[in-house]
Length: 500
Image (cartoon, rainbow, N blue to C red; front, side, top):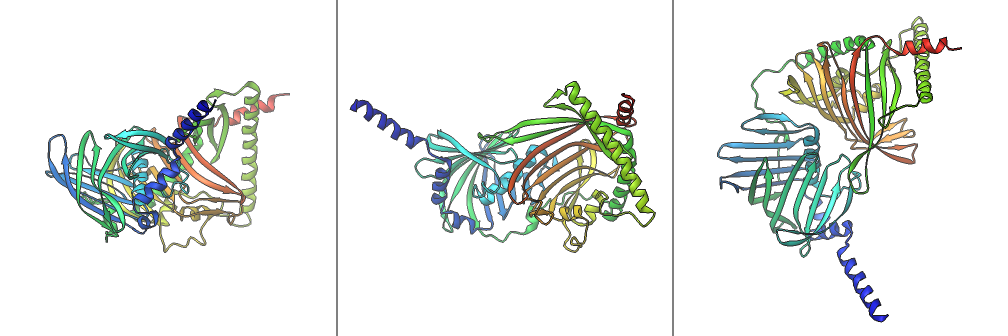
């Protein structure tokens, strides 16, 4: 009996050694790297060194730069062939000598944003950013025993971090976003400004493997803000911005008139990050959407990919018919009020053109997107605009920054990516508060050579409701099966009225 107890005790102690919590692994790594305070005192890093292609031995120069809170830029040159990428706080981009310059979208954009934040703050802000960490167990990295930690961001980017079991230093990273994966291996750590920094890095890029031997690593380097912006590579003249916005506004007004004749399907899918850090679909609702006298009507037709029961569908049809009645009453009320004065501007939707007029537009460039010529630029709030007295939705956009793609021929918005860089209060903060870091992506597609309509929306936000409850919303909305004809909801209403 004593022997069995001794074996049990030894086994328990051995398991406690191997089953280390991710937080304890990260704490030891921070200490090994010089401590969180020493690392956070550095507002930006500049690194430069010799780059070697391990496949053919070609050598060149490599440079990377970071700046708080999320600026990032890399450039390497091999015998005149350049590969460059960056994130300027609003949009990610990449350029090479063969394919030219482009703005990153989709998983590549998410990975660039996440990497930019990580290069500036490591894992220190993972709780604030709603990321999840978990242990990855013990493994070997180039023959060295290592502790693995998995860090998953709220936007579905995964960092696999490997720390040397002896030194506790970070020796490998794997950054995975969709089908995009990057691997970095670190060694030759030396002291720099009270911190420990790797002077040798091996990484994979575009099917090639490279090593960089740094000869200079400078903390708090004076880096020009323009280093992170889009390179100026095109000599083609850009359209006059004021004229472009005017044409965009006119086209949006025409789109409003055309919407009455279109019906389409929209599926909204809620997603959540599980305990294992993976982003998964949770539940979905599918609606048929149409427009009646400029107002949207939604008719529920599916839940979680399955058609509604007969009774549930009848209830959904009744709700849609009620919506038509409400619209008619609202129109009658509006017409009555208009006789005594002009209608209120507060209830009118905020157009993209209005948002852009209240924004500072930077880095304009020409690109190809979905096979069409587009004008792309970054946007942020214009400090000279009077947001205090603006409509509520403009006040919201007064706290966002991002990047926009405008079809040059049709003068229509093809894509928008934006991030909330400050908290936004709804109802003075009593009703709700959208937290800093919320993001959304919107895409539109061209139909029938006459109209651009929504095709995809990705929304990721954290909101506190009624001063108490915190909600994390990760939602994808797909719109498809556009058909041009009069709204079907009025027919449903007539059928309902015919029933005894």
